[in-house]
Amino acid sequence: MLLCWLMNAGKSTAGGQILFLSGQVDDRTIQKYEKEAKDKSRESWYMAYIMDTNEEERLKGKTVEVGRAYFETENTRFTILDAPGHKSYVPNMISGASQADIGVLVISARKGEFETGYERGGQTREHVLLAKTLGVAKLIVVINKMDEPTVQWSKERYDEIEGKMVPFLKSSGYNVKRDVQFLPISGLCGANMKTRMDKSICSWWDGPCLFEVLDRIEVPLCDPRGPVRMPIIDKYKDMGTVVMGKLESGTIREGDSLLVMPNRSNVKVIGINLDEKKVRRAGPGENVRVKLSGIEEDDIMAGFVLSSVANPVGAFTEFNAQLQILELLDNAIFTAGYKAVLHIHSVVEECEIVDLIEEIETKKMKETDPKKKKPKRKPLFVKNGAAVVCRIQVNNLICIEKFSDSPQLGRFTLRSEGKTIAVGKVVAVPPVGRTTFSA
Image (cartoon, rainbow, N blue to C red; front, top):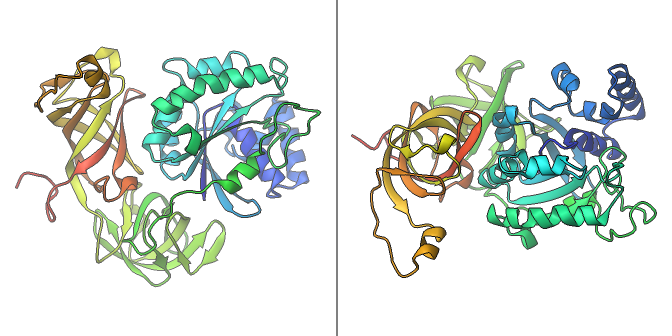
């Protein structure tokens, strides 16, 4: 099961603590990291060094790339995806979250830190919205740094943060009772992570610890008999070409003949690795490394899709989408000719809105005048908060499917100048054999 850490509030430290508590890191390694952190005058960062492995991340104290690690609880094997929390690295965060089954939103209880992330334009808001858009169905909200001197495991502070987050999570589309779990932790000292908290530390918390919550979560099952769909997030050479990604649908076996789309390269599976183990087959929902013959590393790009030969994924340069406009830059208007950056599964591509097809009546419109049913109309432009069906065009072929056929390959975000401006889903693609709607 894939677990994505979100936000920038001690998540790498909490991720490192999980690996230590589950026996993935030994005491000797921890001592080495403690010394390294002390030499850099960053004594409290040593646990983060387990997840943040490159020098830039260790110097800045910020995750830049999507870190990857593995651990097991009593019942489940997890892959941790440590997604960047800082706003400068949101595209990398999107890459991590798009693969995840569960999101762990790490929020700081420290005075001022939660408020900075939660205020309008803050990273907490953007990460929650992106997680929902990218298909992260289950969310664990861990309120971290509860041991901090300004907090000292205060129930009032915990309740204050939960009270502010619940309405926002509901407005972002989460069913809080069914899909969200809150709990307090200390990532640095490991409190309430592997075992339940001692009453001498926190007298008011009677709920589960983090490992218990992870073990209980059930995620929707994917179809093992469906067509193979594996968006490629990375590739490298190792006595053959190895591609990495999450198998969204279907089953891959050693010896299978598959297609790499959109360039329609015929390939053969000569090896499969699940985490660090070599296996003969992999099912949907697994994060895998697949060794291929018949293709060179240079002929593959992130965003390509490993696909069935009999039922290949479509490749198009335009599609129709239903868009929810969030916040346009400088209150601009959204019209034909608007340009943005499209993020859909592992694809990052510049795009242009070529046509506004229909404005959709939103809940706000209905509340304004409930008796008046607005006729369907083709708008010239729309503004913030609008919902619209539009046609989007890209320069290069991209592998996508209708949201109703494959949510993982049919949901996307639009970003411009470092901000998420819209979220959407693919509602129509060109006919079979065509890459555009026009003949």
